[in-house]
Image 1 (spheres, rainbow over the protein chains, first blue to last red):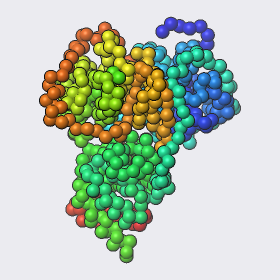
Image 2: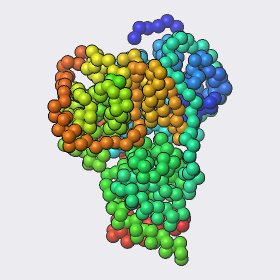
Image 3: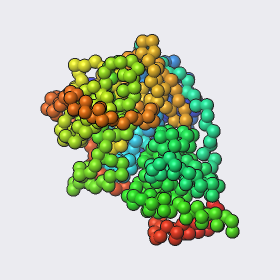
Image 4: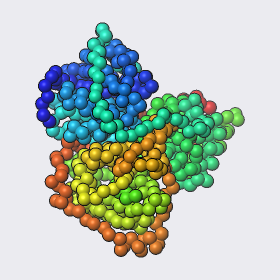
Length: 338
Length: 256
């Protein structure tokens, strides 16, 4: 890439946070915490940017964290969010500043524009990382592969800027360090050319019936593909009833219409944190795990001893759920009756 | 409408996977299947063709085994297929895979290009979006509904936490399709028979390699993830396991 004039951000980490309706989302805080950890280890400078229209308040909020500088990228054409608008804004900014590393949270919005941004700059994006390693001067990002069955340490090849996104829950948002004094905020008015934004998005909405609030449930019995047939759902329901809990499912079960969509736990469904999460025949794909790994106790029943769900389970039962659930229902009823 | 569907063959969901000797990839002696969201992308393309007419073309990259995905797609109703055939395609990053597809279709013009929202093996969730940028087309991701509108399409995007959003966009466009957008069809016997006579074009690695660059990301090491949690394994006859579990639910977890 041609070198540009102007101030350089040599060996700078730029965190691009996500705001929605004027609020910083939780996973942005996590990415910031991860970026602070990388900055501590590498000695690189940490800066942050927020993109939008009238998002100065978020820039001020960011400036209270331990960052060297905050950029507020502003244009009326950046609200509502579109991939074309965000890429136009960030591309100009990154081309000019040349940070070494650009970090973002792996949200639905970021995955909508980040690959386009990296491609526009002829660079690669390491997406959905769950952590990083800094070994012998080399920065590696750890990703899950094959639905979480394996992990991979991935490095960047070629010239910076390097782009990476961190998965929901990769770092703890409450560990973001505050700064000793407020960081300077620079407002940058970005030029989004007329006609650059091709999509016309409408306001987000929720489907009318979202009857069940799984986030409040203390006990959840969840089923995955291992339940095999729709008629077997009833067995899991009986267990949930005996325990006084709610029934939930991984995405394929709801896609098949075996349980309604509002029973779905995972990245596209609800994020839950019950006292007990009993996973029946759930393999533990990343998209499901991000929605339930905050449970206090996880019991997993799966016939495949290698299933990734066992990586995060407190109690693992390797066996056929159809053998184990019926006696379990009886024992629970006995214990409750006693 | 002329629609291209990008599909991928991935290891079967319950296939036991083993690392290769160098610890950089899996051993290839496993069973494969079509990447699930790609199956929904194909189904959506066939439904759009059913409503508006046109042509459905399927494309994949990978070794000879990957042809199975194309054969199944042709049997379900796709009109023709393009196979970027070779082992070298397996280790391409998302950027290069998209470049290879763009090179293979450079003489064609599609109204719509569909991909699944992500693959079950790498899980990049990037190839479709990169392809859109390479082709200069607008895109939208995680799509749950597609309707034709005046001068373009109106799509329903899935957002997080149960939210959705309608987006109007011009054609040509690239869409990444979410699982569950429709109900999958099965191939019929007659479809399987007809598929044998449908065109399947093979493209060798050498034919597109000039459009590729070196990978910009490299897997240094692939490994079984380290456990972060201490897991207690319960074994024995089901009745005994049930008793042990209830004991834990009652005395350790205190939930009953």
